[in-house]
Image (tube, rainbow, N blue to C red; front, side):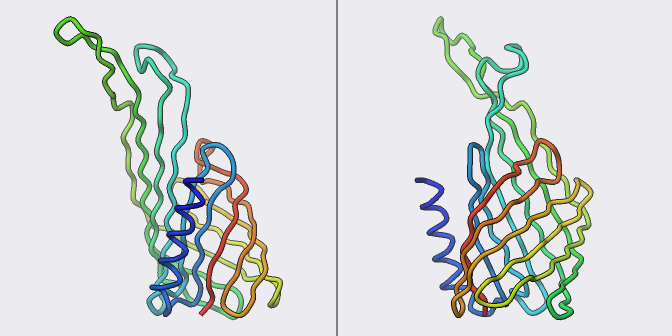
Length: 193
């Protein structure tokens, strides 16, 4: 339910603020630990951006690391200059990945055991990125295939849906840039302007 509320709020923000965008979508992944995100192509002239984030839970590798499961958050943000050739577009830009993992350890304070959060991992990376996308189908049946190539790997997605005037909805699949990044089915909603 929380993810549906987040998707509704992000969609509302998209529909009310991105009237200059060529197209924009918000999406939410399905399943445990799924991500959610948004992307806008040609949001400011030839510039576009995408972002996604989510959290996963992993078992602790050892009680010395964390006495409880480890909560991992993953965030990807990218901005790019994109040129469109009909239904195909290509661009170059930058991508930033951020990951953190937090667990719990028990410490004794004044004779009482207290569970304290402990940072297991905190890493970020920024790299050049290339993006390519092909729009498929004709209204009302639409689709696209997209890949964001970074130093961390390739984030790719395939989506299909239905478009009525400026509104589009559908389903898809996304694969993360690394094996431990979220991958899975998703639903999306967006606008074409």
